[in-house]
Amino acid sequence: MSSTKLEVEYVAELARIKLTPEEVNTFRSQLEIVLQHVERLNQVDVSNVEPMAHSFPIYNVFRNDEPRNGLDNESALANAPRRAQGLFMVTKVVE
Amino acid sequence: MEITSLAAHEILNLLRSRKVSPEEVVTALSRRIERVDPLVHAYLSHDLERALADASSADVSLPLGGLPISIKDIISVKGHPCSCASKILENYIAPYDATVVSRLRAAGAIPFGRLNMDEFAMGSSTENSAFGPSKNPWDITRTPGGSSGGSAAAVAADEAFAALGSDTGGSIRQPAALCGCVGLKPTYGRVSRYGLVAFASSLDQIGPLTKDVEDAALLMDIIAGVDVNDSTSLPEPVTGFSANLRKGVKDLKIGLPKEYFIDGLDPEVEKAVRTAVEHLEGLGAELREISLPHTDYALSTYYVIAPAEASANLARFDGVRYGYRASESDGLIDHYGRTREEGFGAEVKRRIILGTYVLSSGYYDAYYLRAQKVRSLIRKDFADAFEKVDVIACPTSPTPAFGLGERTNDPLSMYLADIFTLAANMAGICGISIPCGFAEQTGKRLPVGLQILGKELDESTILQASYAYEQSTDWHKAKPTISV
Image: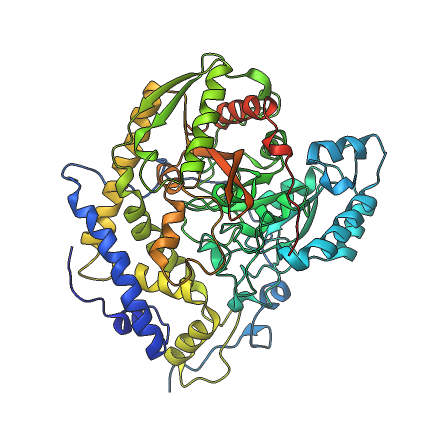
């Protein structure tokens, strides 16, 4: 595990959250304490241990491929902050 | 006596024999909330008119006919708000019912009100709610625990007959312990999560918070079972939890993990829990010391895995399809950044940052992959222990309820509140917290919880042990005096 300083601004950019300078400082000092605590995972011998993503091994759950009703257009759009002509309105992506 | 002080199974008897009507029950609950909730703040909202409409058509011959069940604000009820106590979902109205809710409705229950919580279930005190903390009914200067703090406080304050919560690292059991009610986290996959807003998908489970063990079994009979809409729900038969409740604890082997009785455990909590397990021994159970050797690594493992999954799950909040949207932005990236900065609270941001970091290039193997391996070892600890014992008993929380504001500036101290509960989520096993006594602090009686952990899919046994304990003690009957 690395003791590299947690670059909060860079990680926040990856996570698409615009933090204030105060938040950056607070989070850095708080999360460094948490990460120091996490360092103890280095004490565990994990050689030959399989990683576990899930409590129970369930694979390939299938259902019959039959049509069923989903949300109608109005219900799907009801919570949209911006909508037009039965569609979600998004921020312009291309110039 | 007010009818709101009754347990769910008691009010159901009155409903079935038509001594009260569903409308009277709903009205009494609403009056109780009006009187008590200004002090407790367990609810974010409740819609009396809608509940009365549901009550007027309730079929009292059904298993839960006419019973109002209060819902944590992270579980979807069609047409009701589902804000997850977050500004980002403040005006969101759920477009469909969660499977647990459609099952409750089919059993005759009335989904009632929205219960406060830590934002997106991230926290152990409800202080991370964007709409103000809930208070502990036993001492309103203290937290009810969290994240299902509103659920636990409502049940304890007789503002709910029963409630649903969710548990990712202890979020049902810890507040149940701190408020003196019963809280059950089912086995991972036992209860469908369709309609539960996702926090950490390999850990989250929905479960009941109730006034007694019988009610927990009653709700589990309805909500458990496989669901085509949740591919992680287990295709296992659901045994009658209520029907098997009275089997007792004779010859039940109870393991006491030595790693859970440690420095930092409040002496009064320890005393209450030890007295409780001796009581179970008196009822015919057999006590054995066991070891869960990787206990010391559970918190670290959890705070890699849960934030990692949260950072991925919460990527969906983009201000486009639903939820809060920042009003001014300069292009798409700026729109995301501002929407999420303005919409999320501090703890949610903190965990997204932590989760994004442990998954980021160069750190994935050191943190996330390693944590997943340690998680395997934690799970194996429990599998080994359950070779020797039937259930495991330990404290639910290392301390009784802590003061509002006491831990908010120190995330690690807040995270430590879940030290005894989060291993069960990582192993996927079931666990319950039941009232087992009181600790006296600053002149207040504060509830203590006994946690009983069971094998995967073995909710029946932990319910039986809990029931045997409860029926021979009076702790669950104690009621708080709610005052300023």
